[in-house]
Image (cartoon, rainbow, N blue to C red; front, side, top):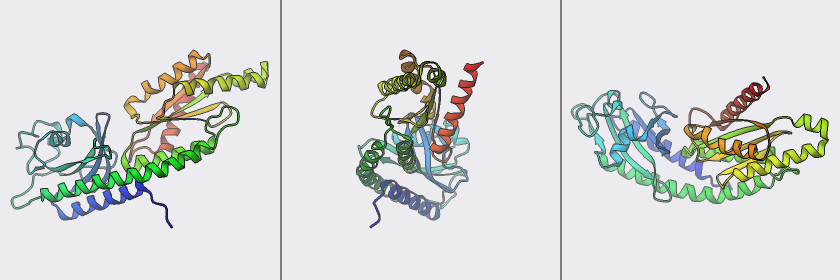
Length: 309
């Protein structure tokens, strides 16, 4: 029997809804978007005349923000509508429709919305009740999907946490790969914000060569304890190589990456551990977690090289 996968189920539902609306309404682009940390990010899109997967806008500058605050759900001509015409995005969005989607805790998850570049022509209409109904169905699907994945993820994370590094007790490479795979599913399906950091210790080889491997092991365990001290339940910390560590941070967007991981760098410094840190964020349609890890690794290496000169 195939395992239930909430992320895949929500993705399938969202993509069927936007495809149906694209075919049965006069709007050219439909999206299921995520609203998080002051941004609206388009996660599931059909087609891409105006919108593409990964497009983002400041929430308070968006049509959807106005709609969620009480403005009209259907906008035949945004340039003539006083509730929307002052927004800069009205220059490229002539007509709009939208309803909010609620997360499983009742909070705002995002928006089911449609747009096109030109206003609706005479005789063109959009069934507001249909959009409302589909947004409510997506909210129900989201609640179900989150519940399914909560159970499934608890098992997957427990399995990942069983793969630990013998010296530090942190996740090892195999465990790290598993938490990355889990996080990628959430990025793709729900637009959940996830960031990573790659950390490389400075001078481990010199310590091993001059003071012995026991001293090197003490340096590694001191680094591990410092990273654990800065971590919360939103983090997964791993040792993925000899002197290399990695951190996955749930809920951290690209705008917050630098400040967020500075806490870990400061904790390492307090512990007397010299290290180079690089960090990056995943983004639906723009950067996978593998891309983020590669970008973080490049930033870490550039800092390491810079410190050596």
